[in-house]
Image (cartoon, rainbow, N blue to C red):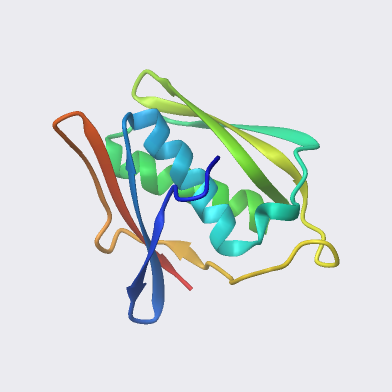
Length: 139
């Protein structure tokens, strides 16, 4: 279902993604799934638990940065990895629901460490009703 929700792009010393979607909420949902897939092979991640995150109101650029930073923190600090996400707009903020489980290095294949979500080349835009984003991660 979510096979081609993002494209990984080459970026010197870092990793980046480009995403397209028909709505803002779908763009953010795809970004949430993409960061998980960059860090872990999510094929074996079971949706045993739900985690809810509230991203405070901001412009689209800061919303993307803040949401992805909170998701990174959820993985690094809480040890929670997700295989699916749902995103709803909440005024100028976001409500994010993650479906996954505790990361288990025996069962889950770790791909790469992401140190931070950067503002370098960060783009979120709407062109004629189609949403686009570009994000560079510090690895």
